[in-house]
Amino acid sequence: ENFVAVIQFNLNASGKLDGRPNVEKSSGNPQFDASAVLAVAGSSGFHTPAFAQEEESRGWSLRDLLFPRRSERIEPPANVQPVRPKPKARKPKPRPPAEPEAPVVEKAPDARVVLVVGDFLAGGLAEGLDVAF
Image (cartoon, rainbow, N blue to C red):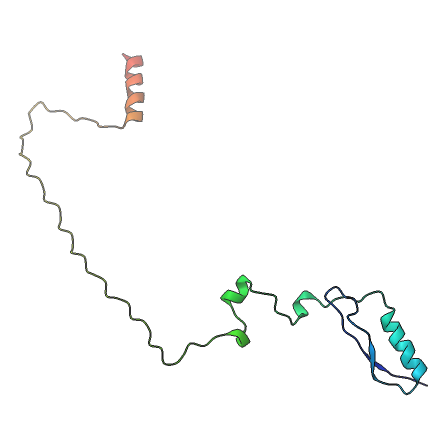
């Protein structure tokens, strides 16, 4: 014959039995029911459910704070008016700088072109002139 018994038992977080197993639905054969209860009670331990399958609250994570589950979302009350931003104080537009009045100087007939260079180039140019002359 095929006997079927339903045994109820609880596990703690480490996978060990928490309390005694008991027969929830009997098979009709007391010896078979007793052997099923002994088989569950005599087992060395069970694998705990995967962490993701646990229904207990695991606390808060960054993901939970940024993206709450639909069941955990809090809808704002409908009668709250949005906060209006304060108008920004306008800064006065800056005036263009006044151009200094520079005296106009006539170019001398014997004027030459002058080269203005930076420190690095000037140092190299000076060394080259010293070597050449």
